[in-house]
Image (tube, rainbow, N blue to C red; front, top):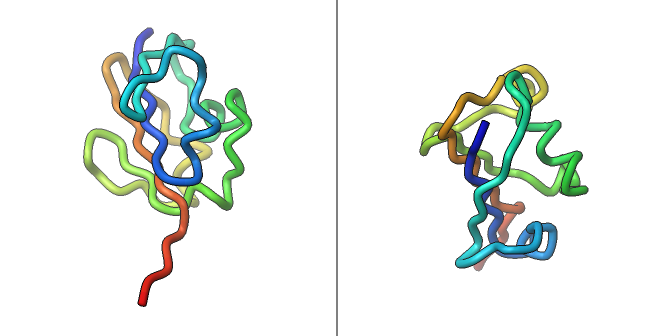
Length: 83
């Protein structure tokens, strides 16, 4: 099934080839979880601080069990500090 992966800021280097504007369509097996996608592209789980599926926040505890469905868009940002 197809889904969209979006990685921002310091996570952008983990994007697979073919990414454009921090997003890429990828093919995953049915039942794939967020953490499995991150593992596939070697995205460090601790660096994926803010994770959204279709604009809805997914808590770290749910990322290992939340199965993706056709057309989902996963977006992730690293921790950010400002001042």
